Image 1 (cartoon, protein in one colour):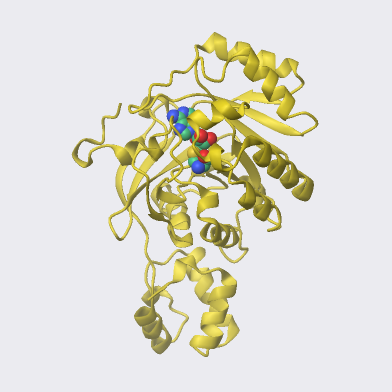
Image 2: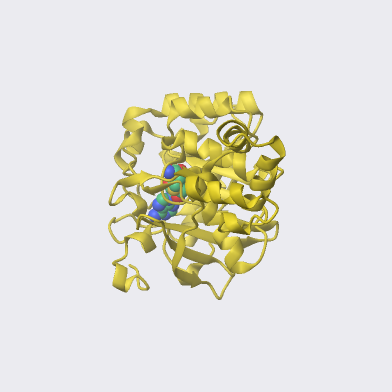
Length: 348
Ligand code: SAH
């Protein structure tokens, strides 16, 4: 059976003209039904002949995830979703409201193999990759649920997008296709823990997305302690790949920096940050670490966060503190998914 939501327009065109021996325009019709009108069955594709619809139903499937849980913030309209996929795997997505439009935080894998010590998603490892259709249908389900159009997406949910490279690239092609969602790739951010070779590979895809690197520490020996992947791809390689990404795409890279008290908020960290970002047009995004049940990291107090920002600014680095959304529905990504099935309303 063919997972039709996972097919880029080019793949669908090939299926339609080669396997189904139909005219090219049929591919356009099917793609529009799937990605603009969002039908859930081939029978609803009323401008296709009945025999073609029957053939498609036999050979392909359309699946959307089930909403298992939904937590809405009364403060800022953020909504966290817990979805269940066809095989029972659960993933999380978040809808956020900004002045610039609605944005979704999407998961790229069920679980995550990267093992970052401070991250809830890493606690149980990875179950499997998500297909392009499963990444996309988080967005489609959210749009269905709220009846509004989403203009921005961040691949910052559970999983490491550059560990599921091909599927993420296909997702990017489908989501930005003019015949479908037509999302501007300038409105899409991909966040990675730093898989250096794939950062370079991504630079060559010609996709104008924003790259965000989860830096979290500018000191190799410290970074290794909180992010095991740093042992495989050391900071020098990762920063070199980020510089390459900038040179190739001319898109400024974001460095995410989750502030952890006593771990990465010291003066030596500011100094090291200055050194590794020298002559590199980047943007540092500070996020007070979100304490997860399983780890003992603490966020510095508000005034210490402001203080750290000031010191970073003084080095001539472009820096912001990320606005916290959904405070009343608490927790960073992964915490809903990890909660026991019967009691997942209360976390931490
Ligand atoms: N695997 C990718 C994307 C998923 S995580 C990556 O590592 O970038 C999205 C962001 O949230 C990353 O910057 C990650 O380091 C950060 N993050 C994870 N757990 C966090 C926590 N408890 N508090 C603050 N940020 C966290």
